Amino acid sequence: MLSAHSATAALPMPAFELGPRLLHEAFHRTLSPMLITDTAGRICHVNPAFEQATGYALEELRGRFPTVMHSKMQSSDFYRRMWTALLDEGHWQGEIWNRRKDGRLFREWLSISALNEGGGETTHFLGVYSGLSSPQLAEAQSEDYGGVDAVTGVLGRRAFIKATERLHASAGPLAFMALDITGFTDINEHHGLYCGDGLLRQVAHRCTQAAAQHGAECVVGRVGSDEFALAWAVGGLDGSDTPRAEIHRMAEQMRHAVATRYQLDSGRTVDVAVSVGLAVLSTPDGAAEPGGGALHLGAADALLQASAARQAPGGLETAVQHYERLEAERRLTRALREDIVAGRLEVVFQPKVRLNTSAPVGLEALCRWTGPDGKPVPPSVFIPLAERHGLIAELGDRVLESVLRSLARWNEGHLNTLPVAVNFSAAQFKRPDVVARVEAALARHRVPAHLVELELTESILLEDFDAAVTTLQGLRHLGLTLSIDDFGTGYSSLAYMRRLPVSCIKIDRSFVADLCTDDRTRHVVATVVSLAHRFGMHCVAEGVETFDQVQVLMELGCDQAQGYFFARPLDTEALAPILAGRTPWVEVVMAPSRPMEF
Image 1 (tube, rainbow, N blue to C red):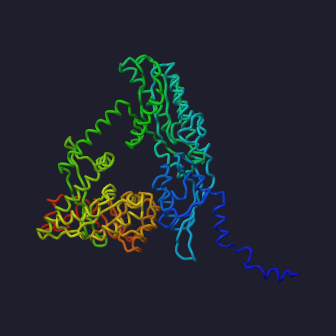
Image 2: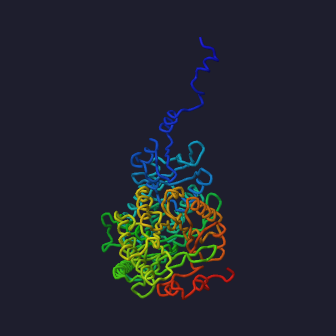
Image 3: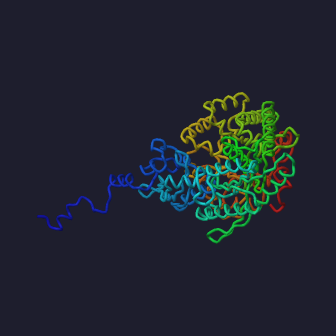
């Protein structure tokens, strides 16, 4: 017979000490969805509850980034704040929208904690989800909900289509207005989804009130996460200007009724701006066409997306204006394609300087284009245009060839050649023979590889991180310098920096612009600079325009900078005498564009 003492002594370990097998069992049996990632953010493991909640199997997720579930409901600032909290405090929690494998959106509460083995550096991150919406609730909150929208009380997408078809059949021609709340994602992030839902209810109420004031029979619906649509009867359209002018006036009044100040459920107030698309829908005999409602909604969706993409809150775009703009874009795209092939785009060079001495340390090649009307087209217009229409790789190739020709001429003329950074697009980077292509270009122009720096964006890392690193290593082996451009504007983690064979991190101009006014931005930049130095990299700040920005960057230890504060871009003709030593650099870098006190 065992005594109490002997029974206790017989236990192999204290009952409160859990073995690895029991912990493994707990991870797999818990009803809370969980995932574990490495420090770069790649998924290592998920439990069965996670598979059931998202529709993804472990085999589909392992090695991929959680961005596979990205809903586009959160901005890049949201993810920057998340990673900053994880790196600084070891944990983060908050509300987030994700997308199931079947495409449905769901809301969740996510808690992320840093894990380490043996109390050392962080090795993994653990994410635990709670409050996942059921598929039924997710469907009710999504844009495909077919009845009354659960959040706002107005019609959902499919119900709105059916109601529009009935109204069209009974009342004839309709005016259709699509309305998008500008910056709604930011409101959700800063004030919470509860306040966001309250705002949606208020907007829906304003839409309904505005429609009722005009006395016309009107249908109001919520057709997307932050998108509403209104359709109302406009009988008597005969093609004359007066009825259409009246429709435009009514739509403008409705827009003004919605675009105003709102009080959130938290007590805070926000000013809401909207983008609007307008279409006049009619048939020759006034009868409803089969599937006409779906056609109407498709037209309005296109108008809405076009209006929102213009980033012009408060804009009102009619169907005619929409198609005119599409035609103008087609003409511009055709001209861009022709000028790329003909080599008519100009390459200019902006100096990069060392912050503590203002001495030039390199140049960045920038592309400039004069449109068919003889006016300059901003890069913010023609670069996205080239990306949308499959021209960006050829454009990048032409710029690289132009830079290599300039470097070859400078070397042949025994000039004081500086390294030149060239933007290298994801389309160029993802070519299977990218390393061989670059090597051949260097050999063709007899340019030493150390004079060329390739600037790549974070987007190259999102699809297959390991393959991207292998390609980067191949380019680095050629002798090229590599840098990550616009750092912090994508969805990647600061933690992957240590694995990248790059020499430089370029801090995006959006950070520099807020550096002197936002403490959080300053903190993020300080973190990036510190980590870059820890991993043997240097930092370049882009878009520096003020003396105060220079001072803060120097305080944070940033190494180099470029921007109009130091020098504007120069063409090859202006640059040649400087590289030849006939014009001092000080006359360029110490230009009148910067304050005299520096």
